[in-house]
Amino acid sequence: MGDLRYCFEQDRVYSTLKRTKSKGLAVIDSEGIAESAIRDAIKRGVFIYDYLNAGALEQERSYYNQFKHLRLAKYDGWDGEYWVDVTNKAWQNHLIEEARKKKAKGAIGLYFDNSDIYYMCKEGFKEEKSKMMRTAPSAEAVYKALRNVVKIIVEDVGLIVMPNGGNDFVEKMDSTGYGYLIKTVNQEGVCYTDQKPTPSDDKKYYTKYLNKMKKRGRHIRVIEYPKTKAQAMKALAYAKLHGWSSVYISFHKNLCGD
Image (cartoon, rainbow, N blue to C red):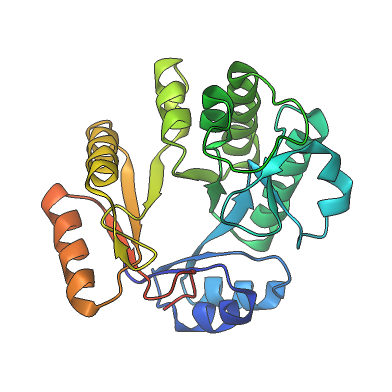
């Protein structure tokens, strides 16, 4: 893969699409973006992955009111975002329909975010500071719901599903015979998170996980958030040392298509 850019800031998506070179990959959030801009990029040879928030609900989304009754808890560190009950059939149908819409716009894959909801339900939301808004479903029910959604998106809709994080979910897919549905994984902040060095224990954990995924034949993508160019070079060298497929460097705390 050539040029690689991630952009989930709506006011920067158009410029990101224009700047991405032929045979490059633009990972974007297409909501509110004119389909013509996406088609123009595709005509130039750009590949598109589109954002899908599988395990959380954002207040800014047009469908927020439709699903706000499924909120489980506030998403710590992200204002206006809530972990959501993915076992609800209407939510699963929503994810599949969103995937179909993104495929129609020209996407070949999905940045499948917040499948960590499986981990959260398994661990009992210990990481969240807010009170639970409703009783969380069992981790097993969450796994089966997400697994079924992924299976339909891959086999019926025809999109690549790239989990962002979701390590426990991907491992569960592997151990239950559904790992073949996941061809690529994405991990944020292996070396640098929020422009600070990632804690050593977290770095070791991510490294072990990604190396395991690489041995299983998966394409490995990493996003790093360093503060300086020197740190960026260290992150790039670290990924190269481990033979990971691609690294995207963002000097912002958000993904702006640098």
